[in-house]
Every structure is written in structure tokens, then in C-alpha cells.
Length: 278
Length: 281
Image (tube, rainbow over all chains, first blue to last red; front, side):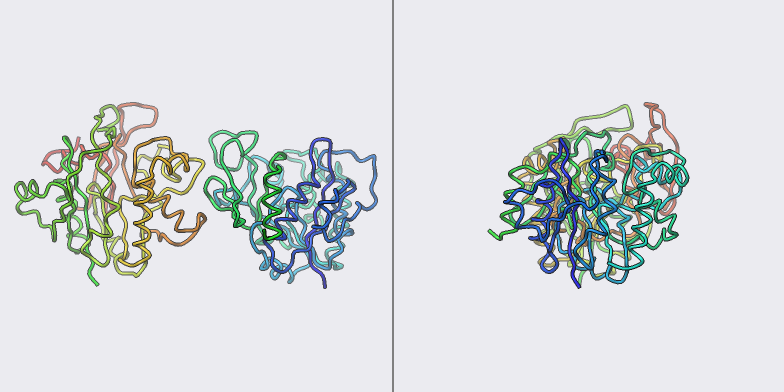
């Protein structure tokens, strides 16, 4: 039995996802006392100085150069097949792990697959319904999964689910048109794909769980106006104890920062200090 | 274990807080049946003007010249800028003669026994975070100290026990007060005016490890209030009548009535008119 974190990180012209994955891996190293193996799935080059933090560097399986989308969502269903672990927690690259999540492993170990279905803003308010970003979920009465944080165990059940997910992504127009016709969302989103796959597979309730993270999309922060980046409105600091404080509020567990310019040299240096215990 | 209430009353040129405190104390004794002490910097005035004041103890503090002013509205169209002496409250830990203390503003009018249950338990600190504005069409203004920051707590009424944890808390509030110009910038507070609600909110946040915690327990019920843009009409036993400002209609009001509700009457001038024997209008 092996357990570990898996991160998909394929660079684009504008975003260095591998660097983000490196920052995430460092945060896992300093915050997780027991399970802290991290593998990265990428076809982008991984710099030498980043490589030691990763358990494995895994090429994207069945990579097709003709697939060209900003979010590379078309490849993400492959994570089940790429994972080197018996039990895997998948994370988006643009996240930081800030506290021990051993209890999540214990909880999820009782199931074959679990998705996060609850997010909070940095003020710790639970976002009951994200009416700004999730119109199509609400209008079509879909469940509310977040692919950015999910768990699976190598099992027939999870394997079958990912086969359905593969079908949904490879037949996107058909699936979204059939199962989510209201307030249609045209681009391929993993969250919507999971919602559709769980509907097709008939496990809408089974895939949901108490997993949660802090989501920094500006529109859900409870502000009167919506900036391009949350960093325009609130200060933040990652201190030497590894406490990450945003707007004077200490963030816990998993922080989804979204902002592509969030990871800078100062943050990397601090994360390296924390991970190395220096 | 002794239990009692403490009211702070420091007059300015227009508002007789001592007179308000005597009225508030009479309500506390009637509905909560506990002794009430007053903290004031004008003991002589109290003894001379109100010989039948009924306070358990009179706790005198030094008279300090006002250090800040505040605009006090009296309804939606009238206001005065007056001295606001609110700095002594952080010393309540040392000033209170009781082991368990209900600290209450002189403009918080008790009309129920709901706070009795708070006096019967052993929590270190109970305070209101949840509040209800009697002007129902007004946008909620007291959920956070500002839209970017931490939850708002009302220092208007709270219950605390004397112990080392609460001593640390009040020391922290004093530290925040002393360094207010720093903390207000840190927490994005626009106004430079020191306000106990903000200092308490920040201190609670810090005591909770800068995250959500259970240091501060919610008092029973909900803090019901009118602002100083609203007007008290009158009080009859446990019934109170108000005029609350209409949204987008300056100078126009909506009538409302409460029965058996404790109400924070922030319009002190209206409350004082009522206490003086007339209508609050």
C-alpha cells in the first residue's frame, strides 16, 4: 500500500505550472509529517533543482500534441492511470498545503473515490452556492465537485468512474449538451466533467465528501467589487513558522491561490526554508 | 462566586451618561436581579444629583480630558460632534468588584431575562457577534469590521469571569488600544477613532489564533439595535416603540415595536429625552 499526492502540471506559454507544483510539493513536505510523497505528471521540463522534491516525474500518458487548450483539461482524466500510488490525493498545482491532513487520508481510506464539494473563502465563510462561476451546475441540478482536490484508490469502482470521465471529456459537446443544456458552459472544465460523469455513472452522492479548501477566486470573497486578483485587495504573508495569513486571517489546510503571479522568488525561498527546516 | 453588572458612565457636555446608567441599572435589577455598579469620573455629580441612585458600588476613575470626538446623530438629519470617552472600558478587569461580571453600555435597555442564562454558566467570555437591525431595509453593517477583514463583535454587552485567561485578554485589548494607530492600519480600518468594538474584535481574533475559534462564546439571543439615525419613541414595561430611518428617504421613518427584547438604543440623545420624562422623539 502506497499513498501520495499527484499534481498535473503542464506549462503553457504564460504560466509555469511546474514551478507552482514545486511550491506545492515544498508546502507538503513541511506540513505533512507522515504522508508527504509527491509525484508530478508533466511533459514540461522539470529543472534539476526542483527534481529532488518529487517522488516521481511521470510523463502524461497517451499525449496528443493536437490537443490544445489553455487548461489542458483534456489530459486530466489520465491521472488515475498515471498515479504510482495505491491511494492518491490529486491536487491542482496552484495550491499550498498548510496543515497536516492525515485525517483526510483516514476518512477517504474507507472509500474508493471522494471529491471535495465544499469551499471557503479566506474569511472562512463556506460558499454554499457559487452562483458566479457555477451557473450551469445550479441550473442543471448537478452536484458540486471540485477536481482540484480529490482522492481515489486503485479499484474497479474508481477505474470505472474514470472510464466514464474519459468518455465525458472525449465527447464533451454531446455530454454537456445532453446533461447540462441550461446556462451552457462550452469550455472543458474538469469540475463540470466530474459532475456529468457522476450523474451518468449514477453516483452523484457517493463522490462527495467533507474535503474542503480555501478558494481565492475574487468573486467569492464577499467584496463589494471584484478585482482581477485578490492580491490587489488584501495583504498576505507566509511567516517562518509556516503560518500563511491573508487579511490577518490564518489560512488552514489547503489554499487555492489561483493567481498565476502569486509564486515568486520570495515565496519559493521561504517554502524551501520551511521544507528544509532551516 | 459573586455576580454583578458594571456600567461605564463618563459624561460629556450634552449626554448625561450617569442618568442613562441609572435608568439602565433599574432595568437590569428588574429583569436580571443582580447588583449593579457604576464606573464614573464624576462621582461627586452622581452623589449630589442622584442621591437615590441605587448602585451597589460607585467605582471612581480619574477624570481624563477627552482625547477624541465623534459625530452623534439624533435621527437621520441632526447631529453633533461631541467628546467620546470610551477608553476606560479596557480596565474593567481590574475595576469590577465581581467574580462574574456583566458589562453593559448605558444605552443597552434590558427588557427580558434572556441574559440570565449567560450569568448561570462558566464560560470565560460571552459576547454578541450576531446582531439584528430593527430597520429591516438597511444594509447589514456589522458582520465584519470591514469587508476585507475579521468578524465584528459588540463590546456593548459582555459577560466575563475573573481568571488568568481573561486577564490576558484585557491586557491584549489594552495593548491594541495603546497601539491603535498600528492596529487600525493592519486591519484596514478607515477611521482613526478608537472604538472598543474594533479592539475587542481584533483581540478575540488574536486569542483564537487568528482563525475561527471558541474563545468568545455567543451570548444568548441576538443583539438587537437601532442606530443613532433612528429614534426611540417610548418604553412601557417590556415594550418599546421606535422610528427607524427609511432607506433612501432621508428624514422619513418606519414605526416599529418590540416586546420583551433587549435593545441597544444607540441614539443616546433620544434615549435621554425619554429618561428625562418625555417622549424620545
